Length: 292
Length: 292
Image 1 (cartoon, rainbow over the protein chains, first blue to last red):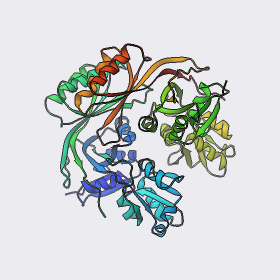
Image 2 (tube, rainbow over the protein chains, first blue to last red):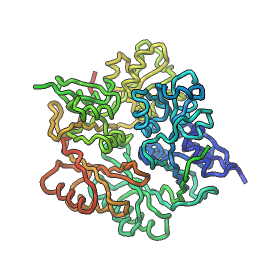
Image 3 (cartoon, each protein chain N blue to C red):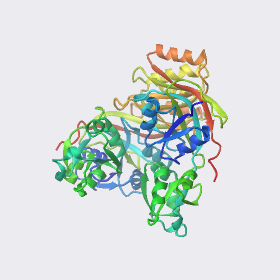
């Protein structure tokens, strides 16, 4: 059997990498990409079999770049979803372990800094922040600059990968912080995790309304409501054609069946909506992050 | 009469600053804040009379930090809205005007770089990007580093403020790019621009559904649809209490009246929704950016 090539939003030791390691077999080949578009392009171009990219965070909301790139640039199929807890830790270079309370600068991804705002504000009033392209890049920087009074906020995998010392665990302000990751593929097929168990089945649709009329979205929702199709998410995103023009991403809590979802789609199309099936797939939860 | 103190997302010469100059009287006192929360806090604390912050861009979508901070941290009232075109220009230090095609690095806000992706990809294949905290900060950096082969993407005001030379105008990929800015105040009152004319009247509501049931959003929309209240926007944002918990921001295309909107709000509350009026205000369009 050929070894699967799995691309992910890198560098190594990001939360996406952590999700990849929890979901796939150990014998896959991991390839880190430095941006979400590069990772999505790689699967569209056949360089890799699967791309794993973040789609939504419980605090920050949707990862717009992923949604927009899938809609506007590379139409791929969502073949699976991983939900992972986001546990942020405060780490320094081992040489700074004694004086970690005197650090003057924190380096991390802007979302990680925002997620730990209360901790930082309370513990280090007046500290300065610098934004890295990822939590892992911040950890890498700190490992290479032992002489600077700088700390990183990152996950456990990054502390291990870059030999940093965790001084405070779980410094994130909100307890229930999770990120959803989509597993993307260029062909429609089922892929089941050999390591995690299925938490639910889902279908994701993209719907464009026929015109900017007040009642159009209400009408769209009616097609699902009267069929008792449970929508776990509805999100508006700009069409990029001007303020006030949106499309909608809808998650339905079941796999595509033969009757109900095709019926709703046919009705919506008859009403002038454009409907695109982005995927019908299984969702998996990672219960806890990898422990040391 | 006391001079109005107007705070905005700085530094000087950002698109927000440009909107402030187009909207307010010349005799206001302008105060730049380095983050959206600092600017919002300043009006809540009475340091300034008005805060002007971005809320939505036609391409990037909502400015989540503004929406989330208003909902979760500082309840203020939206007393006006400014819609401004976003015109991005490619600029270098005057000393580099002859060899601008040889530059190797572009510095700007991540959104500005994303908005000019096609131009950059076509004109400078393989160029490297660095992200600044604002387009204006990027222009400031370029003005201070004449020896570096670096360009900024920023607006006309920034080119003027920092003495840079615009080599290519309007390099943004999408023509219809606009940003909405909210004018926030700690008290409910009307404020009319002495310089721009009103384009429309609006009401913004925040609605929390009673439970995660499929039909709840459909029911909410029904309350507006049957009254023929036109919704120009509906947006979901995370409650920050876990994946799948959302609240909704709804824009209605009219000011709060005595009958229709209060009637819809009362019905929604009776159904178990939490409804908050974020503002009922006038919206203004800036027709073109400030010309040199």
